[in-house]
Amino acid sequence: MKKVIAMIIASAMTISLVACGGSSAPASTNDAAETENVEDEAAPAQDEAAPAEDAQADAEAPAEEAAPAGPVANNEKPVIWFNRQPSNSTTGELDMDALTFNDKTYYVGFDAKQGAELQGQMIADYLTSHGAELDRNGDGIIGYVLCIGDIGHNDSIARTRGARKALGTAVPDAAQGKTEIATIDDVDPSPVGTNTDGSSDKVQDGSITIDGKDFVVRELASQEMKNNAGATWDAPTAGNTIGTWSASFGDQIDVVVSNNDGMGMAVFNAWSKEQGVPTFGYDANSDAVAAIEDGYCGTITQNADVQAYLTLRTLRNALDGVDIMTGIATPDAAGNTLNDDLYYYDEATRCFYALNGAVTADNYQNFLDATAPNPLFNNQLSEDDAPVKRVWLDIFNSTDNFLNATYLPQLENYDKILNLDVEYIKGDGQTEANITDRLANPDEYEGFAINMVKTDNAASYTSKLQ
Ligand code: BGC
Ligand code: CA
Image 1: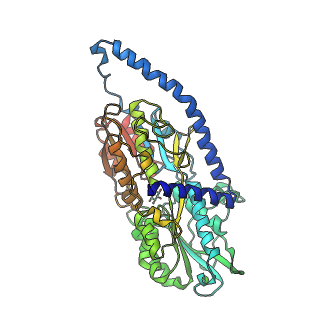
Image 2: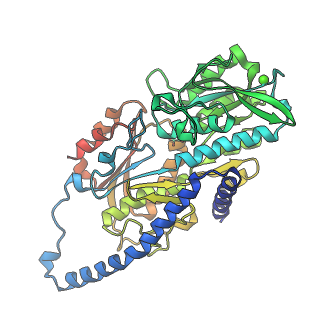
Image 3: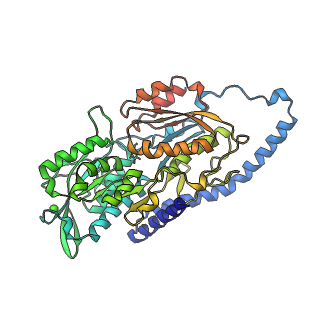
């Protein structure tokens, strides 16, 4: 029940921030959800007719003919991409070959742009509503450092852009031919390295008025948090980097911004908690939400419960050959359904996106357990309707905080109610082959849910299914 209330608060918050901010992205988001629902209302008429005919056909058919058809070819089995959207890691262009691998292929993620704008807004609101004491060394500059997850990952890119746009430090993305900034998509997401003197051409100095006084806002430093072996979003690297940064310009750092909570919490625990420096992350992992009590400033929930459910639900529906919106836009026989303020579906690209909500000191109590199943869609399917199926699912990095501490426990909630016997594989976060080698015999599985190391690498999985 708590979770339901939390959801309502989260979505109400999203809407109210949008209303104040005047951004157009979430409005189109709602449009997408509504359009989808209109289509869904029309769809069930056909779907309802179909099972009746099948039932009749089954009843009339002689026993031998009712026997299951031969084995399904691997390239006709359901494939659900999740968390890393098949796309070009340089341009962001979607990999439509991967997204339409077969008619049972989908992507499940969250609205990276809406979440990134929300994170930027949360940070900007905090700065304007807190006094001039934010300027720790009194130099008239609010200096921040930024931990970047993966320079080729669409979620990471969006968050860097969202923070810079909200803080006024963004410059147009020249590499993409941009000359002005209309939306966050136009912002240069490159790391600056070190920019304590404000001379970088990847960002500019912004300005902000706090308590009637004007301050410069400067991105003092930013870098991709990648370890020596190549793993990205690497929390230990972020913990070490704040050591380097603080040793050379510590008193200039007034705020820490991170593309996720894994890195944000590493910085918080290593440095900013003790210094009392406001630190912001993303994901609403349980440890980060709990740390809000100790001064961690805020995070964004990408509603991992919704994403985990959608990942396995689309797999289930595709395996059963039922309408893909069963238990999503339309309630299933057990009563599972997703409210449309929690997600939307883009039919053209076959992508499902969960929506995001801000988690701050005002509402964090509702989000303390990031692994709790959502009662709206936690009802057990009957094995008569949905017999147990064996599926393969990988998590690209066994040490990624969000995927292991939040997403995986949510998957484990929903695999049970959906009667899916999931083989969970965990990668090392850096080598695709470390994962694909463990898909040596796809014949053993009836469907696949894939979390890639690199968003460009879809073909290394689909080639295994040919
Ligand atoms: C999460 C990060 C995570 C990454 C892994 C993102 O959506 O926010 O915390 O490290 O996915 O791919
Ligand atoms: Ca300062």
